[in-house]
Amino acid sequence: MSKWTPPDQQRFVGFMREASPYLRAHRDQTFVVYLGGEAIDAASFPQIVQDLALLCGIGVKLVLVHGARPQVEARLRSAGIPTRLVRDLRVTDSASLLEVRQAVTNVRYALESQFAHMTGPPQAEAEDLRIVGGNFITAQPVGVIDGVDLEFTGETRKLDVASLRGQLKHADIVLISPLAHSPTGELFSLNALDLATETAMALGASKLVLYTPQAEVQDAQGVVRRQLTPHELREPAALNGPPATILASALKASEGGVERVHLVASAADGALLLELFTRDGVGTLISSVPFDQLRPATIGDVGGILGLIEPLEAEGVLVKRSREKLEREIDRFQVMVRDGATVACGAVYPYRADGMAELACIAVDPDYRRSGYGAVLLDALERSAELAGLREVFVLTTQTTHWFQERGYVRSGIEDLPMARQALYNYQRNSVVLVKVLRPA
Ligand SMILES: CC(C)(COP(=O)(O)OP(=O)(O)OC[C@H]1O[C@@H](n2cnc3c(N)ncnc32)[C@H](O)[C@@H]1OP(=O)(O)O)[C@@H](O)C(=O)NCCC(=O)NCCS
Image (cartoon, rainbow, N blue to C red; front, side, top):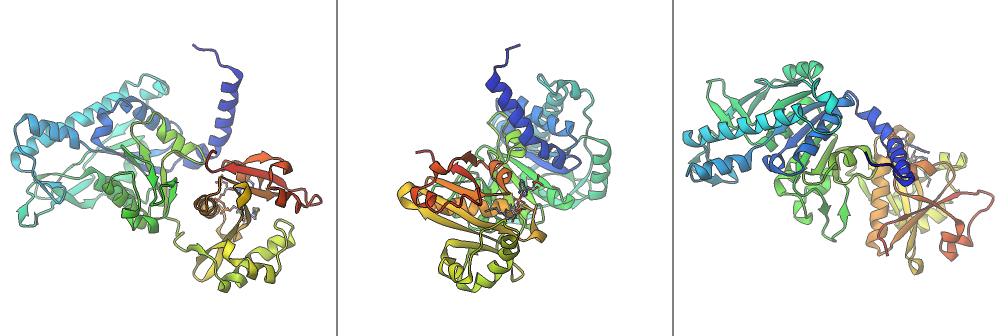
């Protein structure tokens, strides 16, 4: 075994501290995970299985929905059966269905066998891991599309949520394959991505994890977006990266009540762990908490912002701002509004000559805290600083140091501030200076 050096140890300690709130938060939660057929053939497949087993180990209830598209296509090719697609849906005739059955069965066995024979930790848990299946899905034919009968290509007619939930009480993993019978006894081939999405919605899962060959999303400006709102997904043409079908499923699940959808790269070792156990993640999070109302502030928002910040000014958490100052600077602010009430605000003050911006006056209504509003607001403020061409952002805070540190801010000195800001530093208030690099120089 290799010997650990002190920096390794420090990283481990740092990681455990960062991960510990998530370990607690994820316990007893239901996650639906979609694993496409290409992930099963990927070199990272054993690590993906290992990471999923680790989730079970900390008490996550997993519903794993697997696909088998490349495996089906390979079998159809070698059987000399041509693939016919209508709007990206395969026409499954009876000869194709035999190949689909075989391919899906093989993938299912490959998964079960990988869970049973894990090579690395948590190998010890593999023996205790309980994987179950069942007839939870009832199918119906997709029918005729554009004049073509899709025959044994089906879609979900009914999902037996009560049985699924019942199984999750006793098993670690419910494994769902994309094949299901109709009430008339015919077998249908289903789209695994749709099945995973519908299962997450029906179960009210706290997360839907979509493994995808490409998990990083870039917006039209080329900025990597770690967090997106469903609202932004409604214009998929403005986003680059993951396949359109993955983005469409993420949107459907978010709008269907799944609070968090994570896009995770299937080829990257440990991507799921980094996404779920670190603040910034490495994939893309689509959060359905209704952030649609995040927008630049206008003069009409002054009253709402004052209502939000005045109690915090009285407590000394925020620096006092007069109504006049706020009115003058209103175009620096962004607000989040729900049902007509201002529930969060924050401002960006650029120091262009220094390539920096101050993020200030960040506040979330106490009734809306701990739901991710602060994180989304901070992300939006950082993004607007980045779009303005600034490389670094800083905050001055007296009571929220850790919250910023957990989001990538590093404790710094007054001398790290732009000169113009140093001159305004209030030594009596003695705020902590925190800096985050948005883009390395
Ligand atoms: C800081 C603040 C903006 C966070 O808003 P929020 O919407 O609750 O933030 P999120 O939901 O994204 O994050 C909540 C997490 O941060 C933690 N947190 C909140 N305030 C914190 C603080 N002062 N120090 C450390 N962690 C804090 C919560 O415990 C929660 O942790 P959890 O995810 O493990 O449950 C909000 O608490 C607030 O308005 N505070 C008063 C104003 C302020 O201090 N502003 C910053 C100075 S500019």
